[in-house]
Image (cartoon, rainbow, N blue to C red; front, side, top):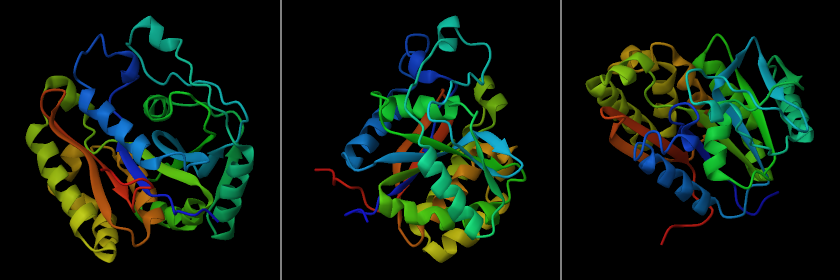
Length: 276
């Protein structure tokens, strides 16, 4: 067992392959990048592997990527040509994928392995900032396409013991994800309203209240304006399930992302290395 139980994270992952677009959109991602660098600092050298739940992978069951050397998946369009030659060559970890699969199966969850799945941009964009050396083994977990909050929370609960084994559980999504509003420079009020509810739920509510509120997230202020389709919110459910009774802390926040959007990221549990 690890000397320190790793925290879990729900991280807003920006837009497209943004770490390779900073010259194209100068300054837009500075605060997000700084927050991810701070996450890396508070983890120290503790993680031995990462389990990533990306808002860009959904399947008919909870699949785990099991390739030893996963390929790249350029799941975006309309970006500069060089962004289709990005490499993030972190190794997979078939052993961890099988361990996680077995944990889910024992819990009665329909699961399986996918030996072909590559790194999507919800995964490699974050990981490029967190671990640019690309040496930390990485396994991806698919969301189930019905987006049932209760089932995703349950999956997180089943996978929580991995935190004691040096596995960093990360949900990669976005606290606001109405792409059309972002493109139009709209979404200011909706993102602020939903973000206020999200912060109250994740930071100030008790763990029991937190779970009840997440199960009923569609009742939150501006819920469907913030998430017309909840693919970028559901990774939070897995992370919150894995968090157990650990308190939430906001680790990234800005109110004018892309000019108008309020965006946040969260940690559950204590950092490995405390900030000075």
